[in-house]
Length: 210
Image (spheres, rainbow, N blue to C red):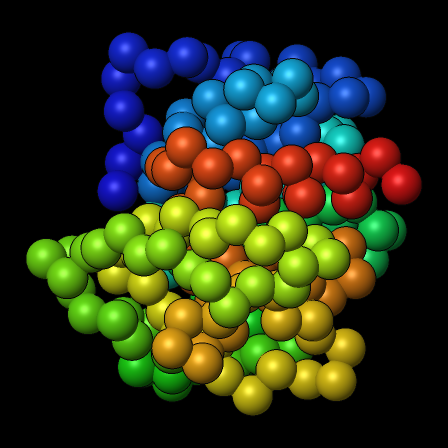
């Protein structure tokens, strides 16, 4: 997926304020994340360099195509900056391809991830683009998300396997984790920015206010 023209724009790169969340804008529907954040009253800034990323108050890693994202990050220092953001405790939201990047191991094909989320990510586990679907998730951590079903948009979604002991599973689809939390990192295999339910975005924002 690519950013859609005509949407509500994030701020111009390089204008992060202490309250602005950075949305990595290399590829994927980063504009949808900016709109989702704006809908809950949080400013967003598009970030495309390591320096811009580090100047924001938190980070969103949007969906897209994970192999392309790896190539776009090569030699930029962005991977190291992402690790620094996680290390210093800023809130991080990773969706779909973003969750793949953070994983300790990636399958289909196999390669190491950034090792910032203690899971194995299986790419395209729910099918290709034509298999995209909207699912009402009912297997939820009620403390984090409440009891109402959570609408989740799955597009070429990965499956998360073998979560480590520090990983909380907040939502499952057919028994598989699809929303997890590890410390300051929240990762979804679906696209919360594309649905009308704002609970995942609000959960991410709340982590930055602790």
